[in-house]
Length: 283
Image (cartoon, rainbow, N blue to C red; front, top):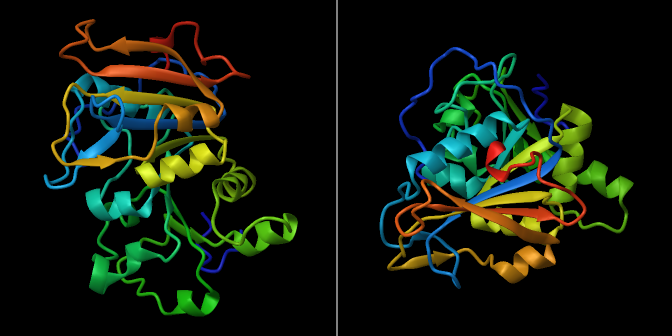
């Protein structure tokens, strides 16, 4: 694992209900980006949480199992830094067995200012994905001088890699911005880490960035049968999905009782088909 500091290159912590034995199910080879988001039932606002209530899971156990199956089908699970600061998420596969020969996905965090290490304001260094023994890649845009000022206490450098890809990407793409971008991150993950299927798990700002960059190949949107009183609106809607080249190709519910179950929406870009013939066979 590359531990070079200067490389240029939703309350989800539920009980582990998996067993340790890998399943004999076969992985479906998928590439590109799969977005997963969960919303309340409001058809116009597409809200992801309640601004007043403490963060907590609001989707069903069946939907949560789906999320963990998607994680185990992914080379990496990507989130923005605010998801880590809010949830102290691990982003590992726990509710379902790993596939035969499979391993935990790499966790990828977009953290331009390395907030996960900033102790005074954010409690940095304490987060689980910095010290749980699984690989985490953190993308930032700080200068070498600023990186030298970061407090690295408690970080497991055998499993944590920080990367600033902005200079190399800018030199290869002169017309691009110097800011971190989905295209920049995906290119670096593929070239430097051989990661070819990325699950984007949030939050809404990060999800919208990937959609607006037109790099999402498919999306799984879960709608729970609740409506938040003080909604945190995601900024994502049907127009954003359409502008990203995605179309709704089908829906499914936990048991077929749409009134009381989560509804799962499957979206895909027009140039591709769903990885399996039946939508609910993957993940």
